[in-house]
Length: 152
Image (cartoon, rainbow, N blue to C red; front, side, top):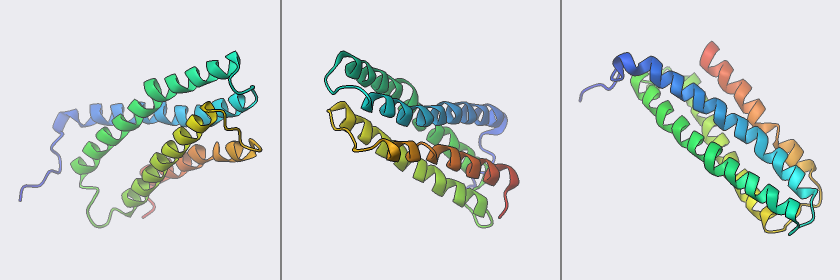
């Protein structure tokens, strides 16, 4: 069986740059979405202002968040295969992968919550949205440490 390690060749730094660019876009969207939902929850369901937030959130998801997440995964998997990150002795990568999977799940939760709010459902308190807004920041800190420090 032929190894895939190094298959990107000279394209590696370009793929890595693209991965990081889309990570920034995705994380920015993950920071913005819960904040937008909080603002929308302060409006009257069905009002013009509510509809404006529905439209803003839909554009954020459609134009920035979901495409960015897809590119993060595509470029990230290319990089992982290129360096043989799925092999033994790459604990840092496996932890990073688990965190990115969790962030993808968070993305799905946030999109689902935004759709519920768009249909007029308002949580009893926006406190949970404010707390959930911290998840992308914590995950980003942990992922950067894992990638740069490679503690295990």
